[in-house]
Amino acid sequence: MQDKTVELEAAAFRQLLAHLQQHTEVQNIELMILADFCRNCLAKWYAAAAVDRGMDVNYEQAREIIYGMPYSEWKDRYQTEATAEQLAAYDAKLKLKSQS
Image (cartoon, rainbow, N blue to C red):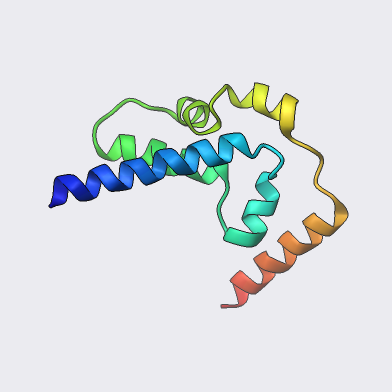
């Protein structure tokens, strides 16, 4: 059963990556506001998982896996400047987190 669980989790993760790579209009700050994680968080988790398993995957390599291209390319093609409203919502979320 464990092998099947890992297989299902891997398939779900691949689908999540494909979804995020397809929906480049969704900005990381929006993900952070709504879900408290973003593509960069996934890359950090991916790189940490690699280290935990003795594998050599650094953060930049992990970001390329998550974004489906080098981060600098994704940033140039798809990232927009955060709006004042987005920054205010993110700051409000951080304040709430620090109070709990």
